[in-house]
Amino acid sequence: MSDQRKVFELKNIRKVYRNEGREFIALDDVSLDIHEGEIYGIIGMSGAGKSTLVRTLNRLEEIESGQIQYFGQDLASLKPSELRKVRRSISMIFQSFNLLMQKTVIDNVMIPLKIAKVPRKERKKTAEEMLKIVGLEDKKKSFPSQLSGGQRQRVAIARALAANPKVLLCDEATSALDPKITEEILELLQEINRTRKLTIIIITHEMSVVEKICDKVAIIDKGKLAEAGDVKEIFTNPKTEVARNLVLKGDGKDINPYDASNPGSRIVRIAFDGLSANEPFISNLVEDTGRKVNILSANTKSVGGIGFGQMVVELPREREDQQVVLDYFKSKGLSVTEVSA
Image (tube, rainbow, N blue to C red; front, side, top):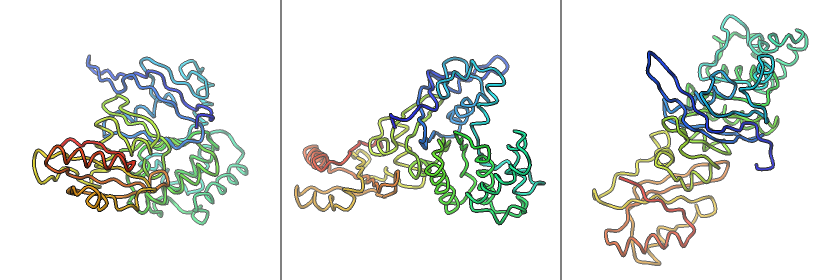
């Protein structure tokens, strides 16, 4: 998306929390660009700094040093009135939905419009349009307590869209939902991104969310930017230990690559896309070279709408045989990465 405008440009961001004379570095020298129309994932484990990072994008958190530009404007230089205008163009949805339980669905959706002093007739019309987008036009007079978790999140999305934002920030927005509802919410976000050309930034600890809908991803580890780039590239060829762990283990339940038959075995991960997924390359390996490997685990998934797969295998014991296998896989255009046991 190099031809797209930069929505956010972060340069050497540093954020420090201080408490009773102690310092905690939440963000350390983080630099990344987010372009218009992207679905950008920011992923990391709990405490990595990802939620702090997203709160710097609308200056809910002030940074220690560095610079954050929003459509070329330095956020730190904005006057209060200018900052309020920027914040109105950046909507946010949360894991906890943040709905007012005593108000109806349509009243919840109208809240940002009421704050912006939009006339009641106009805000009611806009709210109804937003509820139609999220498939809840028939629930406008219901109260949040009468809705399922997925429906509440849809109301939160409708409320976020009501202000006609340029950016939608999603902070762990699917973490409280079951897998089926999560899938539906992610598909809705994809549809909104396509139809409204809305830039969406997703903060998550779930690799499956990133793989499902994100174009690009930044991996945050202990306040530092471990790796950033196209999701497909990072899935196929993770360069850092934290990225490899996220890709290999997914959400901690996808695959376990370490159940080798011998403690000192060499284990490699093979990644392949939809073009090679249908090729029986393991049986071809045996037929073409006479060497065998022990398959420890394998799975396939959709990454950015394209079928990708990965397989973790234990190589033969002999060094010469190992090299034959590695050369064979690479000759077939497969991405091969050694896995630390």
